[in-house]
Length: 341
Image 1 (cartoon, rainbow, N blue to C red):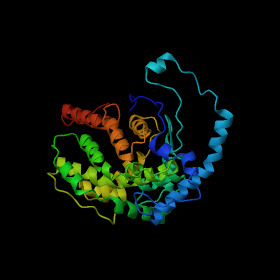
Image 2: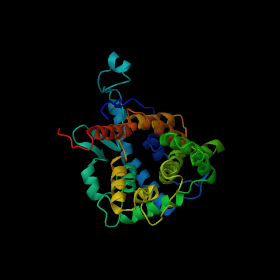
Image 3: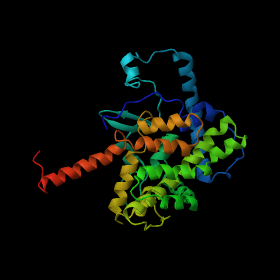
């Protein structure tokens, strides 16, 4: 997507701000009673602990940067860069991933090849699981097989979509673009936001923002596959749905619910596709939009929906669909002949 605008300057992002070092460090050493959701499961407690430990480790580095290099320049800003939407301006701090034009993406310093080797896999699978890459991005650690298994079970526990949301999605016109339907579905889930409920209660402290943001993010990660699969089946399979299979991993279950076919090969390519797209620095359109909306303390449902709307643009995620249309049209024009160049 070379035509996509380069990194822009985001305000503090939702998970970047709510899981930021100062916010997490303020909560170190104590895990207060939950307001708005029950005590975390063992695996979520482990995940919280590792995020806090990482924040404690990174804290001195951020403090040193602020004290010693706060006024250090990162480069020149020209009028052309300003008019072009901060094009080429380096001003984003992103730890989770790094995009190199030649090498590709690194997740927490690891190349995708290294991630593919190191991350846990499905039984008899060869692809690093995307839910394992989520753990890596959040904690800077490769999860164990047992941790991934527990995380998969946790995501299955959270995946149920309220009936009123299903009814709303099922009522949408079948010719409405799936990305529009997905955005609407995410917004319909918003009343169940743990962050939103806790903020409205007036009892949530700033040092607790990150925990509620994490709670919403995990639930959204769990609910996105059944929501997206339902939209897909409504549009292309006359609303004949395939129930979730709790014995499958997150991405494998998504492939199962899509129902394109029931082969292990399709599950593997779905795992690969989602693992490769687990992160993409912080300045692309959808990530930047999500960060910007979250900086207003809008909860993850508002933020993710906004990010999906950015992703739907032809200079961003919709480029995949546009390329497929071009390929199919080219194939049609060739009349079945193989191209010579």
